[in-house]
Amino acid sequence: MNASNGLTGSRVLVTGASRGIGLGVATAMVGAGAQVWALAEDEVVTEAAARIGATGLQADVTDPQAVAAALARIGALDVLVNNAGLERLTPVDDSSPEAVALFRQIMDINVTGMAIVTGQAIARMGPGARIVNTASIWGRVGEPLFAAYVASKHAVIGLTKTWAKELGPRGIRVNAVAPGWVRTEAAVRSARVLAARSGQSEGEIIDAVAAAQPLSGGLMEPADIAGAFVFLASPASANITGQTLGIDRGEVPW
Image (cartoon, rainbow, N blue to C red; front, side, top):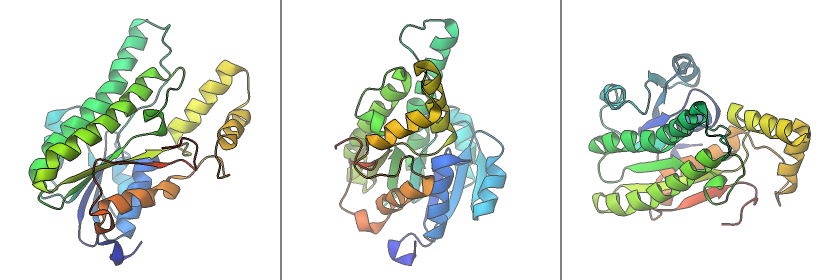
């Protein structure tokens, strides 16, 4: 990335940025010249952010007071990347108290937490600011056993469309990136769970993913999709809002 992306000096907040896609996006934003704050609930975010030249912030996105305290350390904000999320198995036939609590936790982090951060961040954003949400290709399709995650990512796409219309008059653009299978802890865990339930190996699950993609390659790496976030945060996408950009090697036709 270079200064032609127009991010030099931009103040960027990336949530869920201690690892995986979030850390990959934060790294790309730093590479594009932005001043980046990486926020996550776990304390490892401080060290992870320091390694890439960003500033780490520790906060739970579902806690309005914690979010307010984190944003107070940033001041004005040009770009918000809502990436914090949780992916777990939630079979429809499991109604145990633990399963219900997990379902609520996924929706709380992936949807309510995104709304809390966005609602507070826009007070620090002026005309020309950009918001990029992390959706998923599962926000366009159904996926057995992952009801809460799928529902939450459908909601993220809906929020993106709604906020684009609501914030457009303020000059704030809102878009989303919908990754396919990216090699993250969450994706590897899901593949492992699917393998165990189906009697297949983890490798066979990954092979099935690759077979569904017109472009070969299997699991992507966080760096493979980070450029889409930079694009949507840059002047190159100045006339794009309310859209969800699928990055999945063609797995789900958009």
